[in-house]
Image (cartoon, rainbow, N blue to C red; front, side):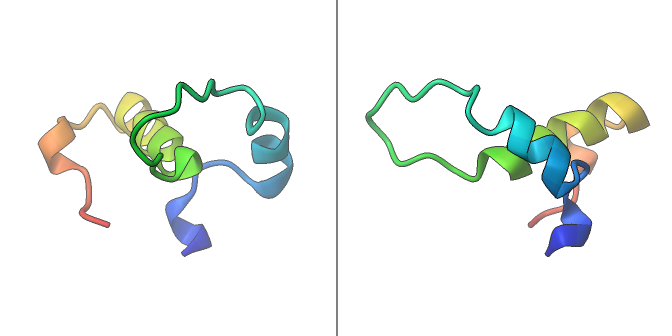
Length: 53
């Protein structure tokens, strides 16, 4: 599954502590969500064109 991530382990280690935790619903994988956002920005694709994972 690492091929789905746009951030390598070193980059993710620097970013991982930053997202806030508001409690409530269980969180999805932040690294996966951020990778999707980066893919969207870089490729200019529509959200519905993102691959299902």
